[in-house]
Image (cartoon, rainbow, N blue to C red; front, side, top):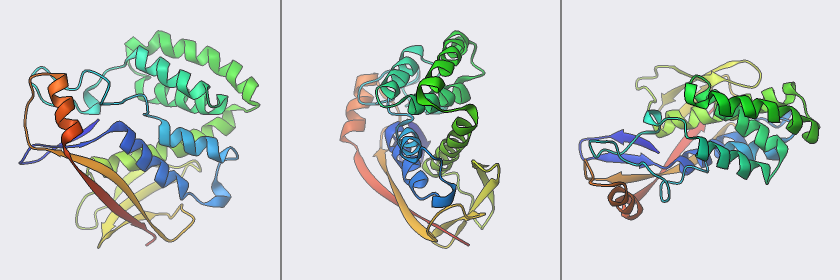
Length: 237
C-alpha cells in the first residue's frame, strides 16, 4: 500500500487502486505508438500489483504500529510466484511483462536472486510459446513502467508546486517525459497521449489513528475508513 502521513493520521492508497490508475493512464496512450499486443499490455499494467491485497495479506504495520509503506517492504517469493501464476493463466505475454516488472523492482535484492534466475530461464520458453521476442517485450514493458511511475507520483502526492518540472520516466520510445502542475491540470511534455486532455481517478482512504496494535486491527480500520475519490486532469501544454 502507498501511505502518506498528514497532521491527522494516514492517507492510504491500496496497491490495486494504484494499479488501476496506471491502467487508466496506459489506456490513453497514442494509438500509433501502442504495442502490437495492446490489450495484453494494458491488462498487465492495470494488474501488475494485483497480488498485494491489503484485505488479505500481512504484514500491514511495522514494529511501532504504523502502516507499512510499499517502499519499506522486502521481496516476498510466495507473493511474486502467485503473481506470475495468475498472469500465466491469462497469457504468456502478460507473464513476461510481470516477470520483467519483478526483476525491475527486486533485481538488487539478494533474497530474490534464485527466484529471478529461475524466471529468466522460463522467459525463453514463454517467449517461444507466445511467438514474441525481446524487442517487443522491451517496448511493452517500458510503457508499463512509465504508467506505473506516473501513477506512483500521483498517489504519493509528489507533484511539485509552482510549475516546477519533475521527470516521470522514459517511455517506450526512449523519450524522457516531464510533468508539472498548471492550474487544475497536470501537464505532460512531450505529449504522448491520444487526446489533448483526460481525467483519471483513484481511491484514497483516510485514517485518523497514528498506530495500531495488530495487522488485523489496522485491516479492519482500513476496510471501514472513509473513501475519497481523487480525480486528476492530465492535459497537453
